[in-house]
Image (tube, rainbow, N blue to C red; front, side, top):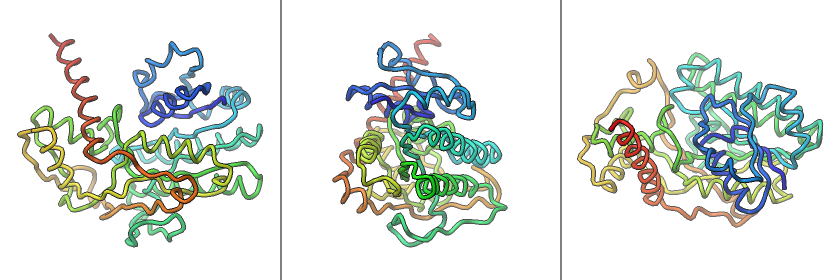
Length: 329
């Protein structure tokens, strides 16, 4: 199979590329490196089945050629991370909606299946836990840029499903719940790499808010496996699927776990949301997926525990820090 990954130099995209190459597929990635990093894919460039283009997905000429030559599109390109969303709302909205529209238009031209990466953020402030794919969503006000990401990704989902219903373009929507693992950066607010880096450096571990908000963290290898299972299953077309762990933990509990697993002496400190992000910042209290749907269709369940994930992230970041020290020396 020839696969095209948009955002393929990103955290999840690079792992997906590895998995596809590992099973013998040919992989092309397109990424403008706005949040992705070439270092994530550099080790793949010697593989004769791997190709890349450093370009934006809104470049129709480039996308037309890439899509015409592929069998399936994994659309992962998006603006991600709470800090980026809060401070760059225009970029968030335009990247997500205009980019997805561009991908779907050219995919429809050549009738290529599209796997759309979405997010648990689309549930907004919903309180019925665990979240099911057909649950009602509760969004915050438009005056809070925090909700622009959730809304833009919901529009992405509407577009993908509309292309299936109206134009019979095969699309599958996958909602990720806090995917983490090696190569993820804490640059845009991702909490696990941020906590791990702080713990390894002996710096204060900074918990935003009261720390009682809870999340379920999924190892990137589990997420990639779910994506591949859904992409290969004909009955997944035209549907939405949650992908995430059911191992719920508070953010304070996560900080304590990171500190314990890494044997760190770092102090845990609390920072108000207003100081961390913006005045009046709103957050979800709980975010837990119901994964019954994907389990029934494909048999998928997570294989990695949160401890496994934290240790894998720590090993990756430790190597980076050691590399930085050797360069400075």
